[in-house]
Length: 454
Image 1 (cartoon, rainbow, N blue to C red):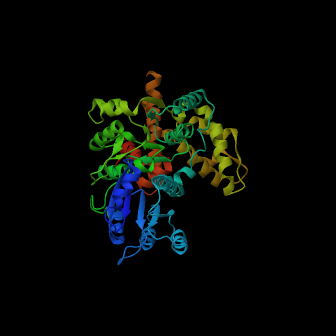
Image 2 (image 1 turned 90 degrees about the vertical axis):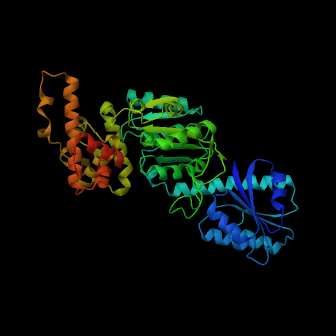
Image 3 (image 1 turned 45 degrees about the vertical axis):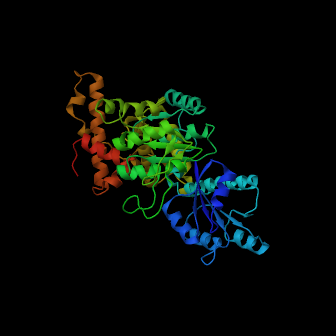
């Protein structure tokens, strides 16, 4: 349910607006431009309907200009009892979405408000797309590769896209979980709506709640202005919750209620807002084990994992490496004329590695090799080396089961890759995690797993 602010010094005009619009919106009223600006700082409204003249204070147009100076992308509908060509031209020149007589019919007002709501959604989508730097570095429109494993994953994703069911995407860091979520969104009936991605591991629990549900001004220290929240930003589209296993219990409780009731209440607010969002989630953790450990709600799990999809790690789909290499090299040709292919010996080196950072790590390796290469073809010497001297003796013991030996070797290579990344980045966990192509939260988990102190 959208929230409308009526700014008018005429008592009762908001009641007339409410009579025209019915109970489709939450409608609130203030009597001056100053009060209107204060309200816009307090609450994230969807549309403002303002009177043109409100003596002796600022006009509705002046309020609109000051809202623009505060970078508030809210559509304004200017209403007046005495319309003139001059005032209409001024209102539209200053950015009003619409200009109407107060005597307009209910149908005219409803149409204008609906168009303004759609325009507001478009403004927010444009702003979101402009800031979406991560997508510009994505792997294109769909996962790259032709292995049986990845074909099965894509086929399942495209089948489930037709429904509105929640999907849980499992996979290690760097396997392309967000990319698969985008495939589902683009193949769904919500393709024309926004796709909003959020990393649940990136913020403290209190900030995660504010980021998802929005907040009112003054809801907590530093909340100097109201915020809509990502559930409202994703209205009509898809909200992708990455690393859902890292969500704190108190946020899990509120997420469950949102999914069940399809409504949110901003932090510090007292009004529930209806939402229309499809939720896709992803994790690199074993959620069933977290449930057994009492760290993840079982009822929330079943709400989110209506359809589970597992993305295989790169080490289990190595036949896709040549196609991935060709893709990365083709995409970076704008950075220079060379190289445009990889030698067979270099491809063999890539095939012998276990890729703990998966596709993101492969991309980083290709970028580095392309920079260091002095010809049209990347050679084995251009690739970073893996020192097998660090592989533990247990991994070389032929009397042990093969699965255990492979596991020991993979862990050793993974540990070495982490140490090399830390050394190359002067001990910075943030830069080292980027170098390996994994999230910072996953990097810290790996440090703990391998007992590495920094």
